[in-house]
Image (cartoon, rainbow, N blue to C red; front, side, top):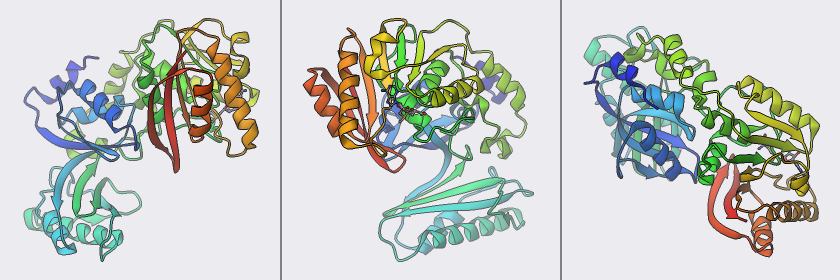
Length: 394
Ligand SMILES: C[S@@+](CC[C@H](N)C(=O)[O-])C[C@H]1O[C@@H](n2cnc3c(N)ncnc32)[C@H](O)[C@@H]1O
């Protein structure tokens, strides 16, 4: 994907800055890989910590990442990353930052703070102290007192204290990017779009061979697959990005940018199929695919994952799925469903299967019983549920 017009817009000598992005716990390496590939960063220049990736980038990359990343939740401009001992250290660090490039005089800001570890102050204290430091810093440099708006700020400053490490950043995304804004039907057990994209990455799907989600629910996995195959920016349906309010981006014509991104999409044929046993959920999946503009790319049908051969139109090379976890299901029924699904998949040769489940012990037992080769396993956090992504081959 080449987006030379972004360099034209910002000039070749556009300033570079440190960014960091949040992602889901367990897929940080995939997020780092995605950032490297979107921004053409070589080697080990993306640092990984729990749920976060750090890297150096150009200012225009903020736009690229917000629109094009599929595994990131929020992207921030890094203002400070330092060790602290006390609240007064936090004030001192926050006060030493020049905020004029990020908050215009007529804009209102809010500080959102998060804290992990043992401290003798709360995250509310951090937000209060940093808020005061921002006002004082601006007053010193500009002679102007900034206003705070905790409900609808123009600019959101984020502070995170993890043990002794303080991070201060400017939120360029707004609400989490996993909210793509194409979901019009909310499946009760919907998968996070970022995890769906991570699973597709792990499948090494080439976009040309057959791709199936045989328990597709509201269609998240097949819709993400169609967006990847057609080179559609996942952020294209969002109405809001926080970066649009940052002074450095106010002159960017967002409508023009959006139509340029849209022009990169292709309309080729891709063999993608979504199957679910519930006609109701399938109806929802079709509505979601229509809303994402990829209903013509996916074949949806009511079917049974336990008898896959009876429903598929082509030999899939990749099956990516999020089966029920058994939360509202009797344990024996869950084991039976996993058993019948795995043994039905086993009949299809040369398939890579990627599964996410919170009942991974049960899934692992059946995969081993079916004598399928488990090639990869990783623990991920899906909402609050400890889950596992398993990759195996027939
Ligand atoms: C966890 S949900 C999938 C949610 C989906 N990934 C999403 O984001 O909306 C599991 C789905 O499996 C479906 N299902 C259960 N048993 C099935 C079977 N034997 N064949 C096909 N689908 C089945 C359920 O109807 C449910 O929609």
